[in-house]
Amino acid sequence: MPMLDGSTPQAVVIGAGPAGSVVACLLARAGIETALIERSAFPRPKICGGCLAQSGFERLQSCDLSSLPSLEAAPVISKLDLHSGDRSLSLPLPRYRVVDRARFDLDLIHASVRAGVRFLDETTAQITPGGAVEINPKNGDPQTLHPRVIIVADGLKGNSLAHHPAFAWRIGRRSRVGIGATINTLPWSCASNAITMFHNAHGYLGVAPMHDGRAIVASAVDPAWIKKRTDAPPLVSLAGALGVELGDLTQTRTLGAPALTRKRSHIEADGRILLIGDSIGYIEPFTGEGMSWVIEDAAMVIEHAIACCNGRYNHGNWTRAHAHAHLRRSMLCKSVSNLLRREMLVRTTMSVCARSPMLTSMLSKSVNKLQQRPSLGMNPA
Image (cartoon, rainbow, N blue to C red; front, top):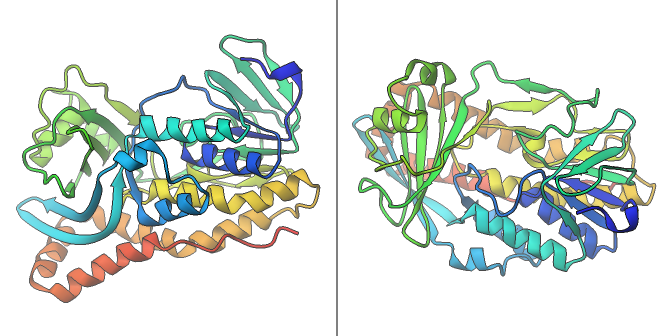
């Protein structure tokens, strides 16, 4: 639908995933007129492991967004089962909630609309080199908006910045691609009280149980290996190579994601364009922290976005705050990502851990460190 009376809001948020919906809701609550633009029709499926870590849930609590129907229905998981070849290892985990992303994202949108956000789905958005936002609703007239702040939260597949010279993706040379689906039945090899991860030299696949007996399947796999497997669809091929029986997927919608390991050359521009979540960059999501991290970004960027609206923002504040908050997490995730490409080292580590409760405890503590909430950033004034 078109904007009411053709006016430009103070803030435009592009992308209605968790990061975009949370930041839009918080902006509206702060009294800032906000529009949330989304290219897809809602509700929509999403490739995601569906795991919301405790840090993400606590941040939603602090934002008064934790009483959502999809969160109340989400099973709570406290164990990670790892399988690599003939090796297995079970690790205790901090609490994870397994959410149905289609329902969860829609719940967050409804919360933002209740806060006063104007939501437009099925609407493409492009940021011009001059900093305007050109929107093109499927069932409305194109418009050019000139907001005081633009928050980009359109993820890996977003193209709102395609024509803006300040931003470019830098993709990891060995980056894997993502494949996922929601299947009707939890595989027999997966426990109903655990997140189960299967690993080999070509990639890994995670299975998380949902509240209604279905299961979320999400994987990261080497694209070169996928290209060689022409005998079956990619997800079926990977599951077969890992020894996982997913059942009949002929009627199941499988989703894909482009190269996962990537980052932007910049995360802000012009003192009014700020990037958050997966639009900034991405590291392979083996530990299931991605959704919590983007929610943290949404909470952290608010003070900077408000400063933009008030004409008090100092360029570079968001870049420094984000780097400070995520440095330790990025280093840990890169270490895990590098380890996962060394199949024999993974299996050796699992064997040693199986015989050493102390080392198992250390691994669990590393996951705990990934979950620790960063500070809300630096003073933008």
